[in-house]
Length: 183
Image (cartoon, rainbow, N blue to C red):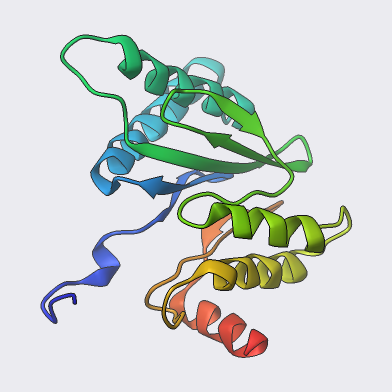
């Protein structure tokens, strides 16, 4: 039970890194916040050198490298998070998953966290190459619903979208509308 004094808007599971790249995690929140900060810094460093936004695959490789370094350095522990990194560049979407070891993989769609097996099975049945953004949002929410414990509301889930316009986190009102549409 959370305290009525807690401001739920102060911590997010979905974070923009650049205009076209976003992150979401499963695991330890404080570790995630450290990696969000590091990812933003890496993206800015790339921009300062090349005067263009960092490609999604480049950012994934650099963040995963940081995660891998923490598995073998003395005096530190590995990051306790798995990440999903999505981005849009070169006219198409990208989705990568990185685990605490620093290994990373490209996906068309995936699930992670508690009950991820149910989520992946659900996605495998529903996925197709020609999914429009609206349908993809509905599918993502239905996938969450497959293994969600309790009632899903705009206060306890977040949805990030990425398209030509960039990456953004849906507002609670938008999430509520999508939840109403699948009810």
